[in-house]
Length: 254
Image (cartoon, rainbow, N blue to C red; front, side, top):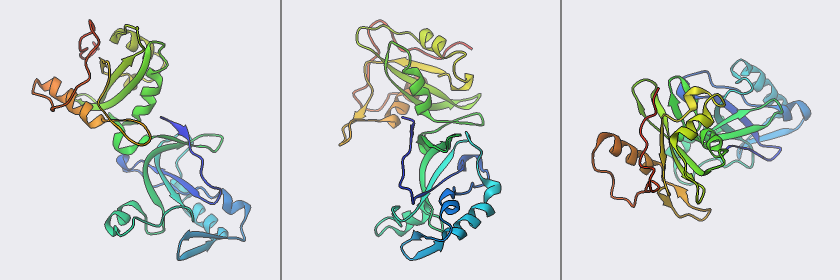
């Protein structure tokens, strides 16, 4: 789910340009450098630089700083950020920049209050035409419908927009829900390209138990959708079943 990130005061944050858009990499935020220019910052276990130098670096990269409200990849750097993966140099090289920034793989955005807001995981982001859409954003909106208990969105192939949103929706107990209700709920309230092109009303979705609660198997949801759309046998799973009387709902008109 989207949420505001809280990090220690000496951890620096950068929201970089989205790598999938091949845009210029953004700059770090260096508010600390402005407040305490005489102190040193530990940017790696074996590297310290002054806050004044941090500030100069931020200014050098200012041209690439993402505007407020523009989503990008979240990067972190600071003494409480791990310097790398234990005995995994190749993974470390992929996840860290040469100057110590950890590329989290998270999609984030900064707002006018200076908050950094988590949108979702980049690998789960939908690429609809030239837009990058976090599935959690659509899921959160779908769950504002009074009949919806849970909603899970995946990206599926689409000949017109590269990818389209497909939503698996679990109604509240005792409620009957239709595709039309959900589409009407979205129309005019979220951008048209974020409205799910496909809706499935189901009793449950595949999940994997974990220490912090069940994790939805989005990969299996995608396999299920693709198998259904091609008419080929799906994976050997205990699949979520449509609610009685609802059936599987196909692509909406228009």
